Image (cartoon, rainbow, N blue to C red):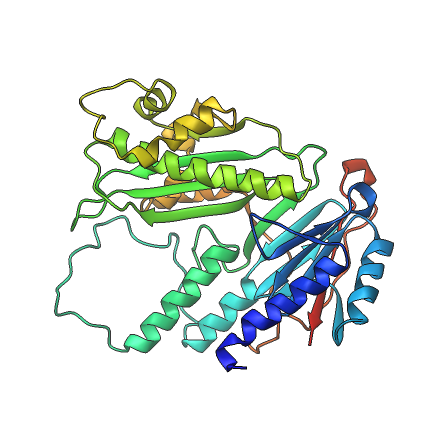
Length: 372
């Protein structure tokens, strides 16, 4: 067997084992498996040979562990506390996720543990003035820093304000009904080099953001309405994917999902598909948002720009607005301070499980396993 084929071979092996145990792979995310329903429901999140097992019953989880241990050499790490660089805290009523230890370790790695804190990730002034001849002093270190920042932003820091706010994290609260809400925004012609706009969106579930995005649009927009429409289209597709993922996990989300947008022209264009000389050129792929509106997947509502959460994903904001939106986003201090220094593997820690929350319809505990 060629070494480069090993990951695929392992994935096929663990997939076959889980299917044999009665688990069904989620077609919206091949790393998620489900089995049972109601009190016997078990959800497994798979990342290579690390597994997170979530369920409504400690007995069912224990049975799942026993079945897996009979098929693989397994290390039971107990209720999850560290996973892929993220710290997880569980209580009967909420779960918090943060990357404070990861951030402190990153600051030490690059000799910035004593750096001065900043109020926003970037200044509001134009940063596009550069020379083609400019180059990084250490290109390898530059790529490493950027990669680590992107990982932190993707995991649990949508605000990406690192120094001085390292201990902020995400909090998700137990709820009887899971209501998904989305926010979409765009910054027109933000890039001064190619005049392309930026897309930003975020989705909130159980009181905290579960997915978010900030990226440059693939083509220049001819108006702010067009840039907002392109962003809304991307957000609507993300919304549909989230709904599919949760539905296959037997987690019902009421439809339509409310999507907030701060451009009235964009809302009109999406809800009233008229042929207009100023919008007839828009690429047909962006009109998928109209399909999701007609099919009842999303419902658009206007939201004032001052409280548009997605605004922080499209541009560099001043301190006051940035901190306001960060608070509305649900970023919170997550408890006791993370220990500075030292690298602790994500699979070596345990904490108490979530249990006995029947009043809130949430009796889930999440355990961590490593298979060999």
